[in-house]
Image 1: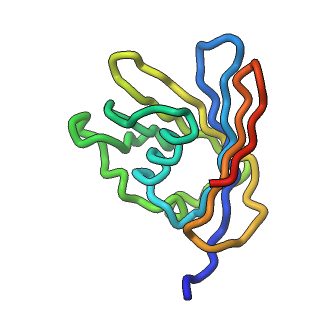
Image 2 (image 1 turned 90 degrees about the vertical axis):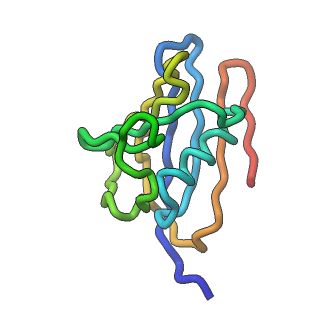
Length: 129
């Protein structure tokens, strides 16, 4: 039986866009940055064909083509606290830059559970995945 892990509530905000586009995801702290990238792709409705990069505490993690550190690091290894922020960039040509903020870590659950919420300025959707 899997050991319960902490669930992080993250708010992803696409920068430089009006109206504001954001997603809220609830993810296990046991997932890696690579897995978080996949979750963010689903939440944003993207196809995952472009390079990606996370900037966490002045260290870049992401696609090997960018000479970044490996994204195969679990979120739990960073010791994130409420209001910690990191950058997520998708598609280096389009340069879709996001701010990811840790809103809370209030739950404990199985490592394979996550869900997301969204508000794109026109409607609000809530989905459990």
